[in-house]
Length: 207
Image (cartoon, rainbow, N blue to C red; front, side, top):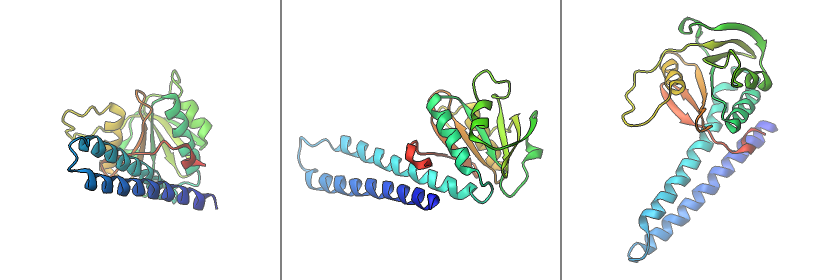
């Protein structure tokens, strides 16, 4: 029932924003000849609505991508939400079908039961293990402080930090899903198949 409620909330959230976009598009169409109408302002607002839909959908698909590989996906979601609110940077690998060990360097073995509190404590600033990536396999935290291969993608003028480059780099080589929390902005995202996706910050998404 919990999973059903989460999916329903996300779908309702997306439907709400789609309705708003439809209404605003109708207003734009009927007002486009009005010289005092700010078309660019409305387009910017619609773009924000589409971004909101994208981030909400991203959380839904995040759950879809990892639920078959760990029973503790809610703990992972809670951990990145709490890390995001505190702006504690994080990099978390969720192993899926293919082993990732051969692509990781310098990690410290933990072999600990997965919990949101342990994840948060590892990425607490000052913890010796907070630098580098956490490796999750099934319901266990295998290792921490792992160094990942960086992507060679050219992002042009877009500022892409080391954590994000590492997440994309690993996901280009293997089917793992790699979660990132930005230390600067607190924004959450995940990398899959060489692409970075934003994750919704809506608190009710993880309940």
